[in-house]
Length: 570
Image (tube, one colour):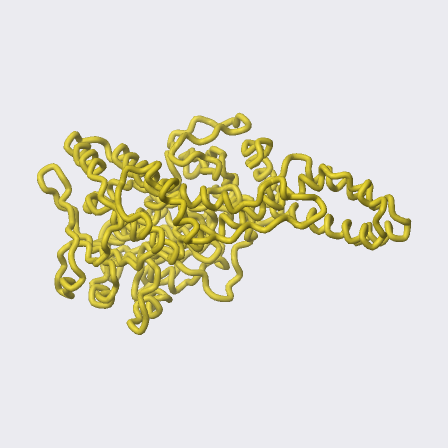
């Protein structure tokens, strides 16, 4: 990107646009965070039913929301689920290219085809209820993958709601409707029920694993009693502690988009494990489907459990024993039990052959025939195990894990990024009077030829079959998603370069020996570019579009008056 394309000014522009949107649409601020808030209860005649709903028009599927929110666990339980948007249903009022998603990391962009559900479920004995139990779920439905923020929000409002019920929820929703919309790069104070949560919204310009960029303007932020260090990250160490020694194998399965089932003892363990696995390949976006908590009532149940075709590229988190038999034919099954300790260390599950998977065998294990492409990093395992013995805090262990996974993914992606950059046309080949040159097509074999001198070995000490890992990655949805995104970004960069070159050209001089037809054609093409670029939010140098508009008006003014009139109307 161009040095003058300052990321520090972008959040301010986005914030201004968000404020304009907020002032013109009802519930706009609320909707920038949540699709709806609903309460699910158990009705003796109807079964699970939605009791209260804020913004009812936004409920993705009332039946689905009900059945996904009643896990049947005693006490208080928190978990997450993910639903596919119903076919034919109107999407969010945010456009496909809303300002938030343009500035957010790819892993935190607003979902257009799915909803996230964040649940706080309570089931306690209550003699006043016919069934003898109080059973309710408070559910936040959003398109944002802010699992830590929304689960923290539920911890504040759910216990209070279960005591005071509906009036309390209405007040909370009105408070959320006063929050500033999420703007990547900004730190926000979010007041709710007397507590102020202070959060920073990550930006795509943040250095992975580093400190966030400083904000462009000083904001008058009051001291917040509750500072959330992250809005989306989970406690990786807690999620992975029973299979730390197999973490690298699971990273490969995620990278390759392999079908995986996580059989867990509770919805909490199921959803957290699935979300942690998906995040293990960050900053690469996981482009397959994933369901943190999947039930037999899910609309995709038949699609994902059919035996007439190969299992789809999806990760499913389940708790129902029924699935043990249903998913026996799947290639990778992670079966988790309650955490057991072996002395001071968490007992590690074993990798077992799929043939040993029995319906009645409830022993934890990773059932797979996957042959690892890379050797295990034993130093990481020793470091983590030593940390357990020394009672190192879980957040420190998680930071070590996150850094290791980040470096592993970056070592894999950097050679691809380097090769992709070589496909970009040279800047000197971009001329004002021709359409921008094409990006060269991606050649797998040509890329493989670069690995000997510019492969992962430059940044990673791990040995193994990197070439084989790349070949299989090329067949996965993750490669397709990564390449499409990067190709679009490169195309936009070329368009920006072309606009800048046109701006530096002598447009008026070019028109002197051209016919009126050629000049009008130039005007129409430039105007079309200006209109499309304004809406696409391209990283053009400051002032380029305004300068080009000025040149355009000068060219138009050199034409006969009748043509000027027509072009000004166009």
